[in-house]
Structure formats: C-alpha cells, structure tokens
Image 1 (spheres, rainbow, N blue to C red):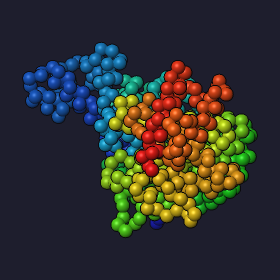
Image 2 (cartoon, one colour):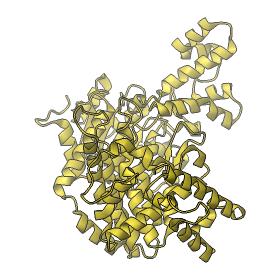
Image 3 (cartoon, rainbow, N blue to C red):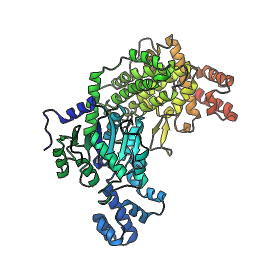
Length: 597
C-alpha cells in the first residue's frame, strides 16, 4: 500500500521540495496537458487514421467512424506497415514540412484558441516554471509531445535544455550541472519522431534508456497526469529502481490504476490528493513560496535599493542584480493576479486602484533607481525584461470580468514604464525610453501580426478609465485640471521619484516631457492610426498661441535631435519627412488641446 501520513500530503511534499532544492524530478503525463486543450498521443493517432480513411473512401462516412473507433484494425486491414506516426504521416504527406503541417493543429493554438485560452500554458505549467526558476526543480521527464512547458519557461526567462531525440543525449549538459532539463521521453511533435504505439513504447534506444535510468535512480519523483498504462519502457525503468533514495509522490487523479498502485506500494510512495494537475502544482508552488517567505523575510524597498546601487556598477554582480530586480517584479505580478476582476458591490474604483498601486510601488522604485544609477547604460535589457514581465501580468483569457477592472491588471506596468521613462529622460537616455516603449509586446488576437507594443498596450486611457479616475481623491493643493489621469500618474509617482529629483516642480516638468515624447512616438509608430496619442498635462503648452509657434516640449525635443546626429529619435523618422511629421503632430495637438478649453 501507499504510505500514509498524518499531515496533508501536499504540505509534506512542498516542505520536502523546499528543504531539498533540485532533488525532485517530475514525471508528467498527458493529464497535465489535456486540461489545456492538447490531445493525447493516441487521440492524435485516431484522428490521423480517420483522415486517411476519409481520404481513401470519401463517400463512406461509416468507414471513417469505424477507423476512429478501432484505428489499429482499420490500419492493419489497409496497410502492411506498422501503425505509428512515421507511417501515418508518410501516408498523408510526402515532405517533412507537409508532415509537420499535418499535426501542427493538434499542438499549436490558432488565434481563436488563444482568445479562448486553449493550447496555452496552464496553471500547472506556469507553477512548474516558477518552481524551476527558483531552483527547486531541475528535471522534468514528460511523455507529452507539446511545448507548453517550454513556453511557460520562456515566459519566465528560464534557461533550460531539451532532450527529445537520441542524438541530444550525447551533447547534453550533465543533469547535475544543468539549471533545468526537460526529457521528452516519447519525442517532440515538431521533430516527427514521436513514440506512441505499443511497439514504440516497449523499449527506448540505449542512450535514452541509460539517461532515464540515471534520472529515476538519482532523483525523488513527483508524478502527475501519468497512468502508467501505455509507456511500458518507462514503467519498466521505474520498477528497476529497487532502492529509492528519495521519496515518490503521485497525484491521486492518475494513481488509481493497478500499475500505479503497485509502484506506490513497491516504493513506499505517497498519494497526493489533487483533482487536477493545476491544483497540485499551484498548491506545491504556493506552499514552497510561503515557506520561503517565512525563512527569508522580504527585503524592504530601502534595503533593496541600497543593494541595487552596489550591484548595478559591479560587472561581477550582474546575476545578483537580475535576481533582485526580477524577483521584485515577479512578486508584483503574483500579487496583481490576485486582485479580483469582478466588481464587488459597494467597493469604489479607487480601492482597486490603490491595491494595484501599493503592490507596484516597491518594484517601481527599484526600477527607477536602476535606470538612474545605470551610469554605464549596460543593463538596458534588464529594464526591458522587467517591463515585459509586468506586461504579462494581465494573462487573463477566459471567465467573467468587469470591463473596467480587467485593464487595471496593466497598472503596475504603466507605473513602471512612466517612472523609468521619466528617469531615463532626466539622464538624457531617450534611447532607453524608446526601447521600453517599443520592445515589450503583448499578444493580441485582434491584430494581424499577433502583438501590440507597450506604448499602445499601456496607453493611460486604456489602462485607467478616465471618468472613474476623475472621481478619485487627490492631495490638497493639487489641481486636477482637464487631464485627471495625467495628474494622478504624476502625483502617484512623486514619492518613488523624489529620491532622484529635487522638487515636485522638476518631476512635473519631466512628466510633461515624457508625456509629449510618448505621444509623439505613438503618432510616429506604424500602428499609430489605431490608437490616438495619449493626452496629458503637456497639452497645456498647446492651448495658447498661434498654431505655427513651437510649444516648449516640441522645441526642446527638436533642439536635441538637431544637435546630435546619433539621437535615437532619428530612427523613428524618415529624414525627408521629419519636418512634415512634426508639423502634422503639432497641428493635431493644438486641436486636441483646444477641445479641452
């Protein structure tokens, strides 16, 4: 029988993972990916056989149904070749590219599926990525062909190696040295070398079998979504480990069969109650992170900034700097994703805004300090990566939400972008501001290219509902004026920016400069016709005077461009059209400003 424990097995497992980082490996089966809308390998085989049946007998739907019901019988009745992906795909297509196209639809999401949250990394995949990023898990053995885990790791900027073919084993980094390894024991769908039939799953090539045997012997195991019914060679390898050094845990949902029960009994394994892989891995990650917070209290913002100042100019502390900044950002992202998206009756809009603001400011101040003290300008990619992670906080795809609250998930990113832009402009580093505006992107099913850049995604008018902001309190003596969102952003960021700038008036002037330049970048961008440039307090300078007179913010930018042949703004212009673009934008802003009189 499986080992019983007096404590919650999930709590015991999380404590083991925390106290022995890198000791546990995961064995993931189809149950981890089917919840994300990815079919099992056998489901793909059945569908491919049905396609061949339909192509062979287009006028006989009964034959198609028979092929789907018993693909092995249909196949062996029509072919002398063994049933398997290679032969199936050869029957359907003649070239490797055509064969990949035949099965891509099973594993890659369409725009519609992306919009519906299908075939994208699940909560389980993202939780596993968190555990790997933190160093608690270093090895994943999976029978799945999809790339959802790789996508989740990419989103977390985690380095990893994938072993999906026999040839990968020879050149791989040793398991003990690699930061993370994914062994796709049955192959990867895009390689067209997948194993799925009974014969294919009976044995593994010798190099892969030795690697698997080593992994199963040297690591503790957490099994999820694997029933052990079909993968004969994996089952045999697992049973061959007679003396287990570290514990074995198996989720209750996939541990019900006779084979899992036998393995659990033979290895004194523990069944972990979990209705799904999402429930199991989110539960593990949340508990491990809770223990970590108990073991090491979070840094105060003041201490974090002091550490950053030491790290940012020391080339040997680049990793420490990255960990410090990205851990702060990741904390903000996790907390932002806990803020409700359904408007609770009686709760004012300002309270939701306050929640996002409070959780944002520690990372906002850290990022502002980073840009300010990055005197050698060597860490630009880190600031861009940090903004991208904040931009990813709004990963909501399905379910109920309030149309005003959902965009607030981007408020931490908006605050960070505005604060870093102000600091960059103050340091005469417009090149960094333009990178922050244009490099981070957000996927969008509503655009042909699939992505929208930060300067449009974080348009203040899209993130913050203007009418709702107008009802929020502001400090005494502050004039809300015609642009309440602009006023609120400036006031909210004062405390984060005050350590770097002398006066409130200086911050206000820099805010106006950034607002103008951001709006100008929106005007010049290829997608500019889809989003009106952001309004703001900088428009005050366009309210008065003739339309052919250069307002202050325009004159200041044009002087900088004229004095420096390498000014980064030149890359946004066609040099021949520069004057026309400026005049067109000035005219637009004059008309916009006068509409607020």
